[in-house]
Image (cartoon, rainbow, N blue to C red; front, side, top):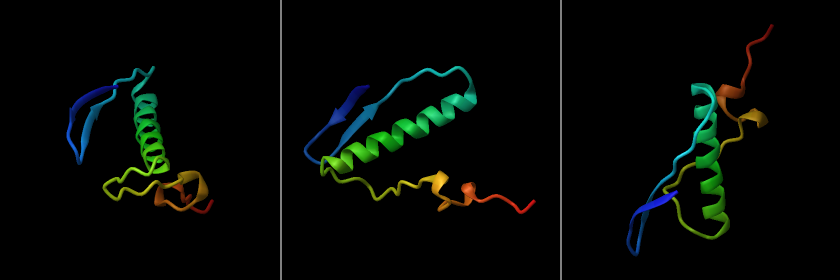
Length: 68
């Protein structure tokens, strides 16, 4: 992780990671973003209003399955 820019109100960071496949890369990126948001909120840092949705809890359209 690299801090690209920081001032009194914001910080711009760049995170690099590697995965074995594009699908794994997509999930890794989502997991990193979610983890960063959770940690920032736990530390009392303000975010831009992004919601963290647990797709395994069935609260997100992607978690819905069609009837079989």
